[in-house]
Length: 193
Ligand code: IMP
Ligand code: MG
Image 1 (tube, helix red, strand yellow):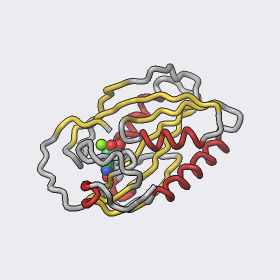
Image 2 (cartoon, helix red, strand yellow):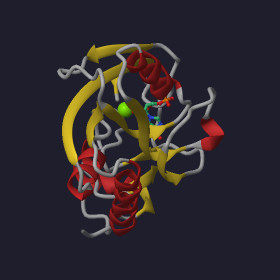
Image 3 (cartoon, protein in one colour):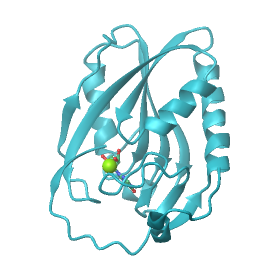
């Protein structure tokens, strides 16, 4: 898929990770997961909405018996800032007791969301619980976030595309880009993933 700006919204973006690099990385992450869970079944839990493309690509690369489920968490924040309050807006459909669960997240920023979800899901007694994140911003971590599979470590910049949004836009871009020239006058609001 092309990385050339074709839509008007792309005038504000600067490609950080192109689609080919994402595809190669997701395949590599799938090989790691297959090696760790050889002969077993896994439940991939996509954290809505940002993980949709990553989950979809990862699931199709994974040569393991697998199930899919979704969870939606929300944190109070402005368009770019997280406050540390995490709520569950949509819970899992599947009972995870005894299952190999892999939480699939778009990005680990402060680490608050994945840490909260890890604590919550561990109370439900899965057999194993791992976290896969396409992106991680090590310089933004405020809590010690244990992420088992990380695609790319990126600088502490606000990024969009491949599922990641700014005010619900840009999720459809097939690449990860740094967002430029945005006025951020937004008031704190309830956003989800
Ligand atoms: P955390 O709880 O601070 O780790 O952030 C978790 C959520 O904030 C992610 O799942 C994203 O939805 C959102 N987020 C954090 N950084 C970015 C970014 O650079 N671009 C878009 N969304 C982001
Ligand atoms: Mg978001």
